[in-house]
Length: 248
Image 1 (tube, rainbow, N blue to C red):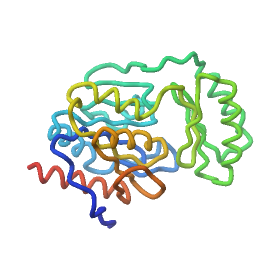
Image 2: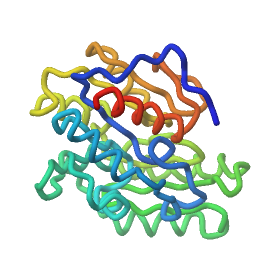
Image 3: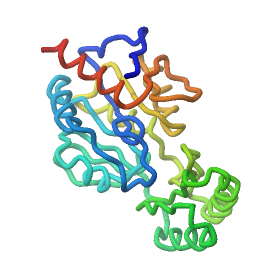
Image 4: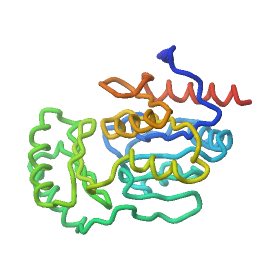
């Protein structure tokens, strides 16, 4: 069992907690649809929601419908598709960045471009597409070249590198922007932002949390702007459980 970072402070009582999903709350899986939800995760999130007065949000590159499939009872806001989608508690999903995009055509183009490389996984998203090369890391140059061509053909989209993947997402979106929008709303406003994430897509949000007087927690290895680091999702779960025990 990995130890906690001894420098990591306790979760502030007035925290606004922002949590990535893959690699943060759950372990990375070979396929996005194959993640395993750890026992106790749903209950932990519900208790954190109560402990922080509702100031707990999921912030992910996945779309919101996908996240709700894994965590159907999560009571807080969800920012999906790198902030292109937002759903507040009890409200339907709304799009925050409209892009003139034929998503089905984009998905077909991506799939056709890598049809000769079955190890490359095409992840279809409502506001973009991702190509994963985890099954064969040597295919990274192929993925990068394909995604650059798709980006050139879709000027409203930008490339987003990730762990063993490259994604096209709408220009102007980002997890930092999602954090900013939520911090302007109750119950997040006036609280100390704490952001936990594992990927390149989380770095801007962690930096933004720190610029607002909070802190970031990097989950796993790799360079980061975050002030603190935990080894894996299990270590994050223990830290969050300690916060709940302390609050009790």
